[in-house]
Length: 443
Ligand code: EPU
Image 1 (cartoon, rainbow, N blue to C red):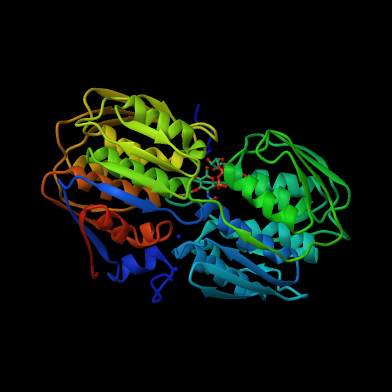
Image 2 (tube, rainbow, N blue to C red):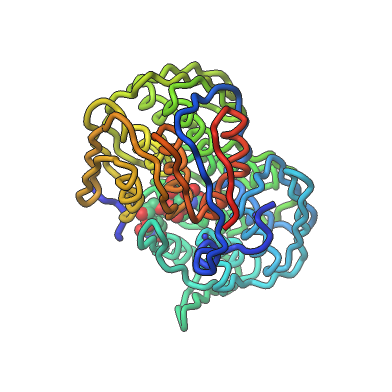
């Protein structure tokens, strides 16, 4: 079942991974394998929640605050999107203060949508607030074709009309958006969020059936409800939204990043160490932690933290990626990095993206024995990987290659690390604090 049909506190000098690579400016991470990771690491707010919560602030004029905001490249790009639309962003450590004006410029330009396709989430809010939106149409990315047809379907059913000309999607609505009963074809995270953001200021009731249930969506709904929205059922398959006339600014604390947490869990597992991960509810990583247990790890769950102890050598595990509460596609490369040197053969099925196995060619350079066929990967564990130069294609692939390097013989250099900067603040520093022999090298 392939369900899919189918780029910063942040390095100040650029925001586009492709550009840095083309100019040879991209930094590298050098990791020397063999160190056992031990200790505690804390995660920051979830990338995939904060990006939408920044956009949600556009829904109400005034001064908003988000706390627990990670210093990652994607947050910086979304800051530029907000700036283009007319809001001003100011960072004070991990707090983001955004001042939203009464009048917005309803536009997201190509360079920002190209740098980060999540920019298209402004569509619903701009239509709801201004009745119009001009957003560069996002193409595919390193993960696959990634259409936005389900976002557009929902917004159309709420009364919006769209035209696509010269690569720019123009949306307009006469008067206010109208609430509607919507059946999503697939529990798409982005389509669910765009619809919620449009519906909170629509006329009447919107029901989203087959909605995505990701914890980040619940966190977005919590922020919007605090702003005065009336959203019920976030976290379930059916979300009901009663439109309101206006919203007000609030302070909101961003939910912990389960993907950052899961990545450090694998770092402990792959080195046979014991790592405590703080600021993340383990229930939001339940399938991933269960699979790590099947692979031989011991996991102790707390309220907002967990401890993971890795085995001497992991055991093979089969898994398939699925929407929450299934195994997260954004943890697939990290898990494969672990299984690449596990005992036995694992079968991995990728159901979300059509190009998510691209990194496997890089893992093969390190000696991994993996065959991919359509959305399946057969991972035959080898005793040890062998460090070498590799390339990061996307955020999670980059993180996975660093993890593979932690357990490999010799040293591994991962290039194109701006991909990693998109989703992880101080990845190198946090791994080093756990005992990894790791450094960042200039490009
Ligand atoms: N899809 C369509 N049509 C649509 C929308 C989605 O065909 O209109 C397809 C996509 O092409 C994909 C699948 O449906 O194959 C699922 O896409 P979804 O809409 O659920 O994902 P998204 O909102 O585009 C978010 C995260 C991704 C994460 C996915 C799945 C953000 C900014 N991005 O993307 O995160 O992989 O949900 O959980 O929230 C990452 O953090 O590295 C990352 C890629």
